[in-house]
Length: 223
Image (cartoon, rainbow, N blue to C red):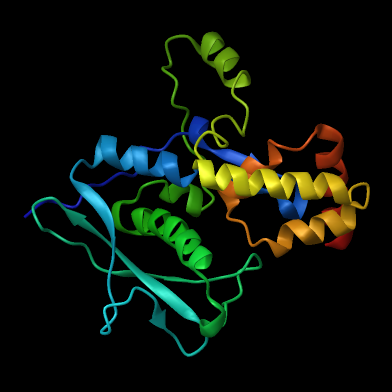
């Protein structure tokens, strides 16, 4: 029986990405990087969806639905199940009959990151809004500081998306550019797409600085 690893302190500040500003600001480590940390520091453990009694994966709740997520080791050891609700972009439960395949895949990605924090402590500092340590060695603080400044918050977030997701997000970006300069309408259109945080960050990289500034201002005005 495999031991459950303690991964507190494994995630570091340079993996954190941010999108937007003000009330539209979010800090996170995208799902692809989270999965890579698991492969490196918890080999043999993989996320798993717990099926329903009817052998489906979407569990019914009094209002909406949820996934049950756990981790299974290659030796058969499993962790306790963790529920993750299917939510819209405002974190409200989606009505069960309106849940789509896209909602389920997005919830799976969000949910296994949350479950990894709860089960293994992976990036739990970020979920608790605690500061993360730097991942750079301490022997050369000046060199480390210089390296940090070269890392952009959205570095790698586009590349982490699948080809299908990139095509989907590029269509959204093109539509946003068509709607502009009506930033308020463009912001409403983006929110209607129910994007995950990493998808929003990837979309941000497809927009020019003028458009991003206008969207931030529109969101701040609406808040």
